[in-house]
Length: 238
Image 1: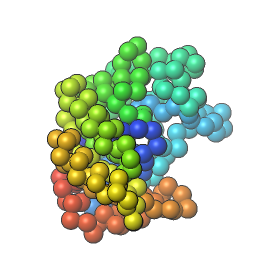
Image 2: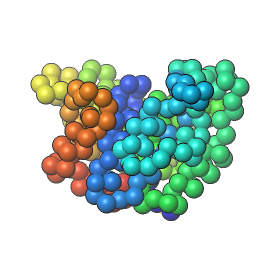
Image 3: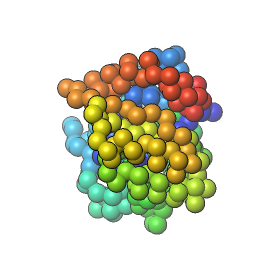
Image 4: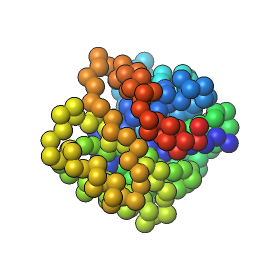
């Protein structure tokens, strides 16, 4: 079985898909066989009569793999919490199905990167949360946080909740960090690092690319020149 990590966010829209895809791209550049997975996606678009996850497509393009049914076990139409989107679609999200898909993928790759839906407390099915899925897959967490006002509270709460549920937090990446940080942005990393009990694994810069894959390529190139990248790779088991 491969090494693996579960990428979660402190909130919706913090850029965890780009972070997960960048890590997949970076690992592939270093020679790893990288598997990716987006177990549950809500808000999928329809193409040719089928639902498609743009997040999963970005992950697969970055990892250089085909987007199979195992990569995306559950595709849901409405842009809602997965439990509600699944109810509307008449779908029951089954953790055992996700686990079996993960195990099939993990058997073929050196490293697995799994991206969650929203944050840890997002409901998936029958009172089960994203955090319960992380525990089901027995993976460590990589927390993606935003840099601005409020991020200390969101990030500390995420790490605290994870540990209360018996999950291991490998580290925190602060994404979209501005070139000219204000007082809130410049002070947040210190407080997050001292209060979360998990290392800050990077302050990733904001980049306006033509599309998300261009941003992934830019960030992967930038990370290649950062000293902390070796620590990130070690946390990923590579």
